[in-house]
Amino acid sequence: MKNTQKFITDNKDKFLKELVELLKIPSISADPTYKKEVLLTADEIAAFLKSAGADNVEVCSTKGYPIVYAEKIIDVDLPTVLVYGHYDVQPADPIELWTSPPFEPVIKPTEIHPDGAIFARGACDDKGQMFMHIKAFEAMMASNELPCNVKFMIEGEEEVGSENLGHFIKANKERLAADIILVSDTGIIANDVPSITTGLRGLSYVEVEVTGPNRDLHSGLYGGCVANPINILCQMIAEMQDEDKRITIPGFYEDVQPISNEEREEMARAPFSEEAYKKALNIDAVVGEKGYTTRERGSIRPTFDVNGIWGGYIGEGAKTVIPSKAFAKISMRLVPDQSPEKITALFQSYFESIAPAGVKVKVTPHHGGEPAVTPIDSAGYQAASRAMEQTFGKRPVPLRSGGSIPIVALFEKVLGLKTVLMGFGLDSDAIHSPNEHYGLFNFYKGIETIPYFYQFFQEEHAKGNQ
Ligand code: BES
Ligand code: MN
Ligand code: MN
Image 1: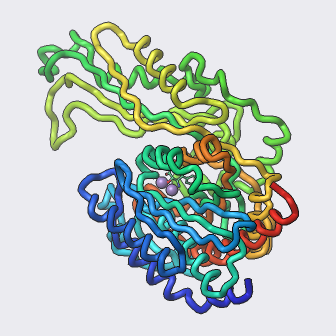
Image 2: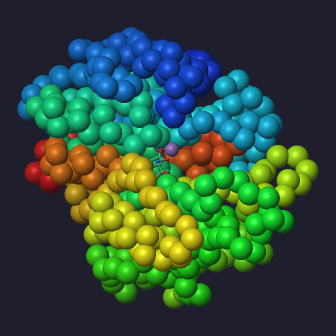
Image 3: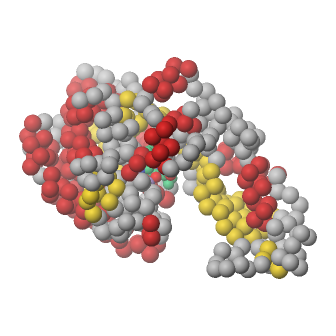
């Protein structure tokens, strides 16, 4: 990997310039206004893969946004790494809270990233991280040091539920045959504390609507006499957690796998400062389920959160009105072995059952996803662990994450493949928030580490490790 590493060192500026260009395209999958830009981004990714030396580069159309596929098969007897990532990004709003425009990348140092960070929507999630794989591949190709076969599958609908990717993998099982899936769409604990993600939470996402009177009413003439849908919705939401922050939906915890004391002790060994956590968020207390630590609440325990709530008058000044309707969007993060379909159904029947007389309620399920855990004794994990140890000088800590990448569970179910989640972002990189950024240290560290993954995976594979 010597020549590969030299190529990376020699091309750092070029790589960064290319990423800046990629980040200028607003590939927001959730907002149809940006359709042209999302499609353009797919074409750009395909062009990068082609010029890096990939074969059979194809922008595969789907019912939604295309999936970019590419491959380099050097020897059928060598193992194959299937790289997954996404080129779509979250919407940028609230736009007024950005210190620089979300699609005009700027590089500046921060306290955590003294060497500079690139500020733009998608910098970390996931354009910056996905791009590391294309650049690492380019470096291995240019140096003639690619140790494995490689396939790329880069989608444009991760932030909206990956529905079409699900269909794509079911329809392309043979083409996607591989030995491991490698993903950089997660994070590490800190730049001097490398970690590998060994689990993701699942997701059940619902929208609710509470309807009271058939029209907005004068809150003086009717106030006190009819059910106010916003008041009712707030009460219903409050009822869904008890004073210990346990979720009250009957059966909600039924399939939650208990966690062993060993695993809890192992988790507690990963460095974490509650004081620093509170300081970073400017809060005076953490709040969560009784009996669990903040780390546990944020990874191995399920959640119930309102993501948005609206209704009634929210314009300037005061308007005296009892609204006809109230709405909320609610997410429930799930852990093994909870099923999103079952949890959504349990939510729906409970929500309907606690609706008081005087209102009607409607529950609309959105996309969901299953939780996933990945083994740490596999060839893939070992290769990632050795690769990070090589470049960070420290053995990475295995750690379950609170985020979701719903397609990971499907990779296992449909393709029978394990996933290695070797991400390089930090929790403080503000993904999905205003001022998302990605450390240059992390960007380059990722590009340097990925070739070692290939090398060590090939070695582990040759030893017969699965
Ligand atoms: N890359 C994130 C997920 C993530 C981030 C996992 C950091 C672990 C650590 C991904 O793009 C994402 O945002 N997923 C969504 C789920 C999706 C169905 C919208 C999420 O977790 O909200
Ligand atoms: Mn992502
Ligand atoms: Mn995301």
